[in-house]
Image 1 (cartoon, rainbow, N blue to C red):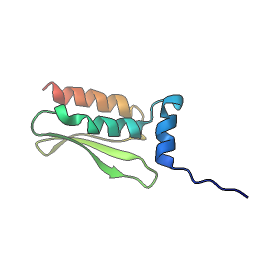
Image 2: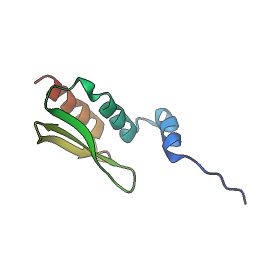
Image 3: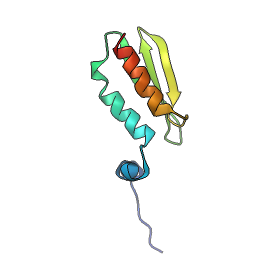
Image 4: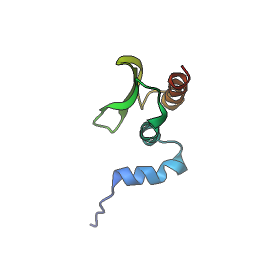
Length: 89
């Protein structure tokens, strides 16, 4: 019997384009690109589940503005909408 080691993170990133948006990869990309946030606004990965899902938080001056898990329905559209909202306030 032959076995093959697979780097799950890389495999997920490579297949994300073929199978639709991967919310975890997209959210991590948005977090890395979050440099144009106004003063006092933070965007970060608050928690990671044992299944690889992430919880993202947006805070303004320490107060929670938005929080959601990557497995929730409409996670990515809600994240993008909330980012637009904090950038334009």
